[in-house]
Length: 330
Ligand SMILES: NC(=O)c1ccc[n+]([C@@H]2O[C@H](COP(=O)([O-])OP(=O)(O)OC[C@H]3O[C@@H](n4cnc5c(N)ncnc54)[C@H](OP(=O)(O)O)[C@@H]3O)[C@@H](O)[C@H]2O)c1
Image 1 (tube, helix red, strand yellow):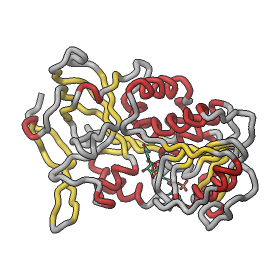
Image 2: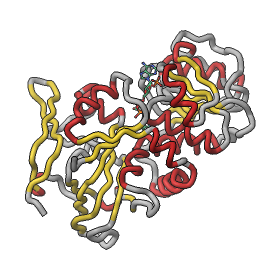
Image 3: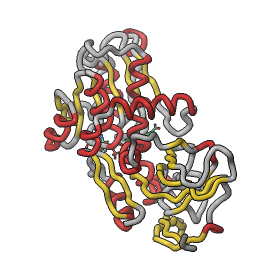
């Protein structure tokens, strides 16, 4: 066991967030009950915001970001875990308020950890990560609202992104007719391989919309917010629902009450961070059951730890396709 380990550390200099790789020691890590030797992490939009200092989501420096991690328990002060157990973590404010997964070691609360499902490799668990977990919660929300497989096309926005691409795969695997909305129509082949039936250019939704437009969608998973969410709300069929989880297209929502009071549609918010443990377990179990692993592999890019800062800028530029897994030991 080496004394030092590598971590991506954020510091604040002249009001700006700067990142650098540092060698840390166990004493540097915050309090917690379980020390995990982290093998892989993943890159999410929120990590891009944290690493680049965009949106000021990190308030205390120095800080180790990374909202997802997977690895092996090294030491545990609780009976729930013992050395050698394989565990994963998404959310709970880790990588936002508590030091996270962009570090070869992390000290964490036991209640934040989930045992790694036996049939899931660490790489695939991180390929799913917060994005895939959020996609599953979004699909479950549509099911809860009674969105039926044979009721017509279901829309996924930001379809080439991490949440979007997994949502396309999950919905297609469940038998829904999926329309993938994207700003990168040149990726049509990739999206169709994931199971999308139709491709909708982003520009069809990124515009001012009328309060009510033609009833088109049997449901939607929206990963972008802003004008596209307002437009798709005006196009939802009577009695259907949208699961809204993202903000890549903007935070303001320029909609009206009409879709709600005249078409009985539902706008269901999705939060993966504080999702209760029971729903978490159901979601992870269902992902492992439903998500075709060859599709997951096809949307996954594995990068070495040193490439992370560059990838963080790319995810904010909207140029990352699918999911990016970080191998912390390469
Ligand atoms: N609520 C939660 O718990 C939760 C959890 C995870 C993520 N999120 C949020 O979900 C969103 C997606 O996360 P992610 O990790 O999938 O990020 P991502 O991989 O960067 O995907 C975002 C996608 O949005 C599209 N996009 C980017 N800029 C856009 C713009 N200006 N207008 C319209 N579409 C745009 C792009 O897809 P195309 O190229 O296909 O158009 C992009 O790939 C983020 O806003 C993130 O904060 C929320």
